[in-house]
Length: 618
Image 1 (cartoon, rainbow, N blue to C red):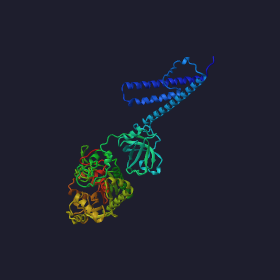
Image 2: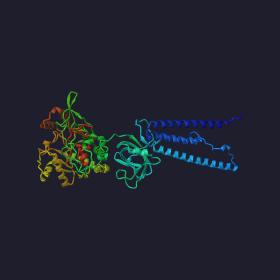
Image 3: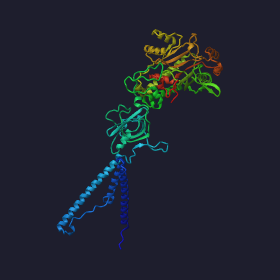
Image 4: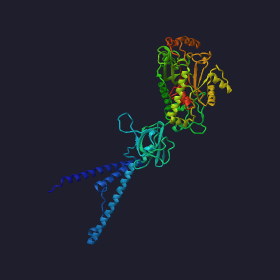
């Protein structure tokens, strides 16, 4: 008995096992298809199984060497058993048989190749096995990879051909034939992403992208290309991203308004003074816009618009410049309490509260404490950036119940003009800094809220209160030299000064003593006037200040004249009893500076989360 080689046995056994495995898989899938048809399920549900079974049959043919299924019986022609073919006929018959077998084999091979190609195409179109699109798992800081994200704002034509990954909000997506275009936004910057069906971009991937909700956060990987014409609706106009992968990082819920409507330019110029009711006027051009109240109700969405991103970057720069300029001038930043006993300036418009059984309030300003630091504690030059609270039931376009105060106080040698010189340098430095360092942001604001650049002189224009009143009277407007200046007359005076002196920024001093706080130093030679001043932008006050009283006896006298109980300010008065420097300063409203520099019609546009008499949320 001759034994067969062991290697050959293993090959035969392996092929037999493979045949059994494939037969089992094909049979099971066939049963599933049969059951689905019996249940009258739609073809869309069992068609993937059919394609899978066809692909397995092709594999069976390639590996086993025969078609799947029972072999067909070849019936012998009648009488063949009794026929004796001649050698010639026999040869001819064999040749025809071989030719027919070769033809059938070729047909079977072509059919198998077609079926395999169809199965491969179907798999690609259905996204089977694709990992270049879909929803990412929730980011829970589970791992750190070597993946690198590129800032959208850095994309330009010099990077053409590079593959990059970006992350941002899906601002807009639209389908077009067998592809789609998507605009992705991060911060101030947008770029267009392009995806069309190809060997690496299946149809279902394009469909997936077009169905992603607006404002969802997405990761997009692609190759940077230069389009034939600029992409006008994006900040990165000279590039596009040819998508290779597209994943949703965080899906967004349906939006309360369309971001396109929230970004639409203003329909005419609103007034920046007067009452604010929250009611919206109808659009003159018929295009939908988002009203102020709706914006504030969903402030987290509203803040995403390029104009708002720019407004608050300008606001941040104002704070930065304020600090850096004063630090360079030798000032020290201080931090004073916002919980105080009594009213910080002796007024009644304070938010009262119970402080462990004692009456207290939120500070209307750091006024008293910054004076103590500058004049009485040896710091001499101080500033503070912090919240200010005003319980004024003023529903106007320029008032808030809480805003950010930019306060400063400094010791003087002989005249409060020393303080005005500091303010002049400070504001000119801020305006110059904004124009130089926030050019892009200023233009993005102007696109939605058109305005004219602020004009200012070097040095800053100064007029007295009496001169301002005369300018109003010369223009036919009633205004007494000792009467308080109304908001309406302030605005008119700003227009007159702008026309006469070609500036939107000026200082006015020597206000009537009767309209200023109790701690204001009276004028040296004019009994009814004071050493006080206001600073204006576009006809609206953005700073109020004065030389302060540093003599405790005079301070008590002025407090009594204003009817302020000494019990509430005794610690403040006592601080001047041990040698206080002559000093002055002022308080600036950050939001109002930004509002007026950018020509915005409502201070709420310059406050992240405005607090007015009717709003405490979000």
